[in-house]
Length: 140
Length: 397
Image 1 (cartoon, rainbow over the protein chains, first blue to last red):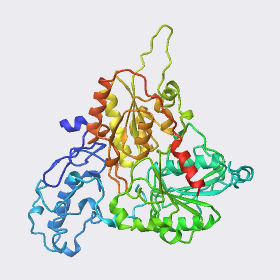
Image 2 (image 1 turned 90 degrees about the vertical axis):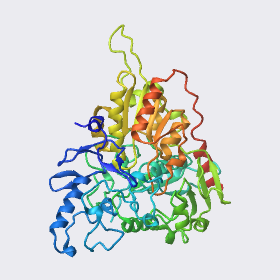
Image 3 (image 1 turned 30 degrees about the horizontal axis):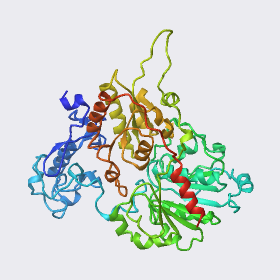
Image 4 (image 1 turned 90 degrees about the horizontal axis):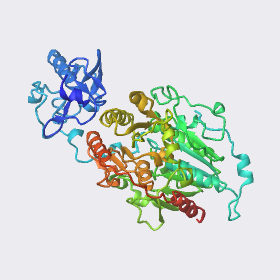
């Protein structure tokens, strides 16, 4: 068991300019790689809860097998966690239906993308963008 | 679509009570929509004070805890006769046992209307329009925090509402103030109450600042021993001749969003291991998933405020109630600022209170306990000052 797993911390990496470990406590483990995960870094998969890294690798495997980019099947198309070039190659920078000839799709999950921005490196604790105002009924 | 509400238990209350000024008892509607417990708690605080003055008050909330509070026995009504609104079924908040431990009872004349927490914007708007339409006879409309309503639904309702309109102006994101045009929209309100902290529109001419608002008065706070018992801590001497060493009490608060409550439960568990033999750690929450995770550390006293005389260190988030309740009772606080769409928790916290993460919070807690010196707590002032001033301001309109 890794040190972070023994410490009860999430082992997923996150970040914008550079990767760093998630600073939240782990509440579950990845069914595929046994990584300790916080609530946000574990997502439902067919075989249980999987980490975002394993799911990203799975998506890249599906994409390589799919000859028609327009019929690409992605169960996590609507998951905000996968928005952004870091997790969805080409998204936000080119049409998502372009063929993915992108260094970010090489499978290197540690590649930094200066245009991407995840919550791990956000300097503001406030949600950016006005589209969320008067939309989320659970906000305060 | 009906909403869960109490039967009108206030009719006799309304008939018998008059204000000290000789005015007939008035009817208030308090709009306290928003996540968590903050809006609901402030709404109930104002409702209690108004009800003591003879008003009948309806509090509307879509908090995920409102339905549980409705069924907790604190209201002067029989919950079995309340009509329940069907929801989409995705909310798990009302599943499982109700572990609420009420430590106060609310005054007659207060009615809670609990809108299901999983209703989307359009459904919330329709429900609010219907509630306000059904309650067209109210004299005072109090809106907590969201001048246009949580879903923007008050933009149509407010201009034609004949009631006295009062805004409770807690901190708001300046981005939202600009986006929603609140600097002009606020003119629809007759009074802007600023309860104990700075806020973007607190400088408008119709704004009145008060001390922070609390659900309870000082007289309702439990003595330390009773407070510890309410937190599930045994303080009795177990056998003749045994001296019970009373350890400091650390309470980790699980509020806010479900994932935040769960993180707090995990933190409480970790802290309990780090402070074994040095402190007693408890986890206070109303979130059943988080309480399950905390196991034997969990408790659900409501409101937690009444137990703070028995708490030596409070660990939580930077929400309005946690922060102001800790400060008012001189309870040391370590808090992490949680991201919110409207509330700027990082601005509310003082540097000495703020932890950068849960891990940092635990480190600070350990340092605090290890360096703690036993000394008398500062005397707690009159907690009702803010809410008294608020009600006076409303009645003087």
